Image 1 (cartoon, rainbow, N blue to C red):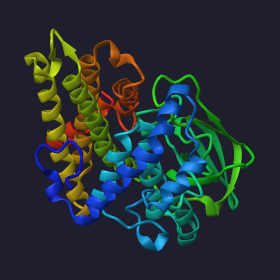
Image 2: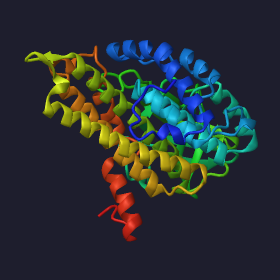
Image 3: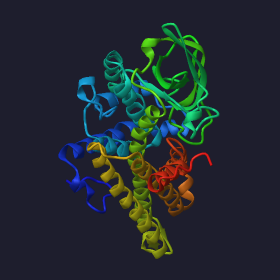
Image 4: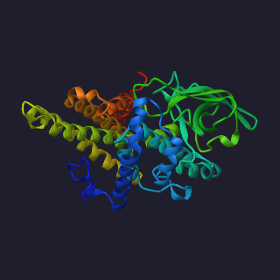
Length: 391
């Protein structure tokens, strides 16, 4: 039986059997188990109970799926990770944020820059969903200009003392461990901070118009003392956190397409059923034009992410290529959410339909992990050789 989804160019024919099975498994889980919880949480602005949901996702092997099996993860391909993000965000961006943060921003730096003890301690727990992590980079006064971090870590004997704060952090209030980036006398370093440390406070942000089903918040450090064993020994300089962001940005490029696909399907099905002037609105030229434009943009985005996935698996993907996919596909999701809302008319603002929820969520996705403007400059620097940041 052919997989139900938006695939006008038969891209599924290019996927391996394992990749198709992964996609179907995640689709079934999201539709049957996660979607009802997400809708209720979004409507009530009540963060999902990830302490219950994460272990279930861990059982399915979809947290940190590309991390090697020796660390308790599934050891799948980047293509499979992309498909996971697509199917998760097809339901809601906040849950895909959990997957992308856990995989690309928490597990990846521990895997790449951590000590053997850190890897074997944390990666299996995170992969199983028994522990939840967060990534502390963005600050109240520092967003795109990562090099200007104000959070500091000072060495004192065998300890480090951390002071500062982080803002707009996914899973901030519930995380068992935080990967925190701070400035040291030797440059930027990554640190692992466990929940409950003296001087370490975690707080949720309320009254959000976007990502209402997700836990987003702040981290505060006031003379927080950690042992030197908590440093990610392989981390150093700006490249370390940026390499993590590239992992998450890749996941976003697929996830945004999932949101766009759901908006397109909602609009198409509605247009076929909704009648005006005696005919389904899908029979009118202006409506068909909107649907066709949505499908074209989704298809182009799918081809972009497919090739990027193969480059990722070959170890050939450049940061600027990842930026192009993130920039393009989030724009596609924005366009499809807005167009779907138009096609649904007044019903488009009802939470009984998914486009308005995607429309709100995608505004966060448009901004985080690099704004649209920043990705433009990353690509521009790559093709011209002239960095235009900070001018």
